Length: 295
Image (cartoon, rainbow, N blue to C red; front, side):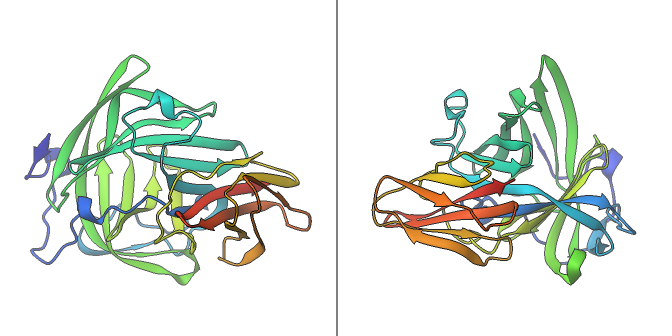
């Protein structure tokens, strides 16, 4: 359901200046990976500011790495058969293991079909949750009606402002769009390409999505299969003869590398510190990436 005038409970006056618009054509999530920086102390962060040309200052926030999120093809993921309409998936690797979120992305909207599948916090939507509609411009809002566990929910999501986000570590992002819902959640999106930047849940928990240098502008060509994950000492990778593989840290540095001589490669992680990494495989069909956790 689209509306060009802002829902009364979220109404606000905006300056008539140039604005970023969230467009379907600018969605290029497939193959991108993000460090999930969980906010442990928000400091003096100011997410509640609305309007045009706003500046949201999160630079004083304290964060810790909670995991790595990679947007991948659903094909080949463990639960793909349960979500045949999904055309985008997100694998999140954390100390608790790996969970999968399944989406249907169309020119009209981004729907979430299920989240955290494979973990104790799995949620399956019998009516999907709509994260975004396209195009999404200032003064727009939509009614999101979704259902899970036999209960129906109805929230409004609105475009509340745009501007610049100041991030921990001295970095910043411009042309950022802020959205908010009547349930209390807030989300900040980069507008081109459309990508998550900061998400704040109804309970106040917040995550800063820091794009990894590898895979950010690359597309996955098929799903990369590696096990066990998390691991303690070795990773077995499904490969093709001649493909090159590398293990990359969160700063984009290659720690280990090699070339496959068969359909399965074994990577020994002796000497690699515990933590989050990205496994990257390059072959004739393209580039595939997967978050790896050594613990």
